[in-house]
Length: 342
Image 1 (cartoon, one colour):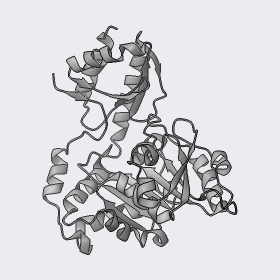
Image 2: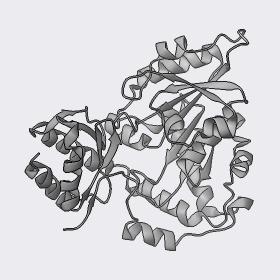
Image 3: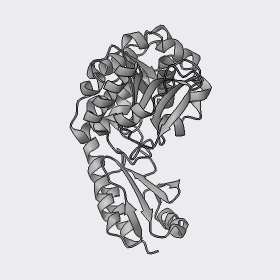
Image 4: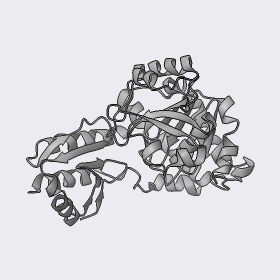
């Protein structure tokens, strides 16, 4: 049986049509800002979000790290959820690259509230504690199982940031999943955030690349920061062309991933060996077995059927649907988990 890889939405390969867009791309030297495909992608996303400028990055982590550096000075502090990607999955880059610490908030499925932001801001005149300068949100949340922020709560957080003169950055690695799931527009987010990172290699299915979008006063130094972080690139328009194709063709189809994830969640809830399935909003399903001791046996049975999922530790198992997970594979996977005996 063909492998069913549900570890992440990063495992996809370019479609034939995307490969053709890559091969046909018009390219130049991006270090000189002469790559027309990169310039087109950056303008396309800046216009889509109603923001001033955009800059292509090789990875989402680098885009986030650049944003944090643009917003902060060494010895300052940012506020984020305890499950935030910028704290858990970027190699300690917040402290290494920017000399900044994180005030971790105990949110709900990776999401924090305006009230929590307010209560975690350090008094600016109390010089014993770091100066709070930035709030980082993540939408959808990775460790939170693809949960989506309520836009009204983000508006409240924006007001708190305005009151206390704080920057507001969005790790939007899976933002298009949230936009499709909630029926929101990109411009809704462009009005609220100072900077937004968009990942092209997850739900949108490109081989690589992220874009940092922001307002001119911050983005004027973005290319310098990217250079410091090692991100000067040449004919990267081949990858930018994949991003343009993905934005034009792969956004609305994210609903297919969401629908399949929901069906997986419903099926898991009906199985005798499953203790709990967390609420499914987008393309991520997180669930727990009744007996944690059965995890190894469960994973081995999946492996025997050529199925791969993620074990996130502490009893948390994760499934992520994506572009390469077809309806045929979906039906086979539902059959596999239904027939497992623990």
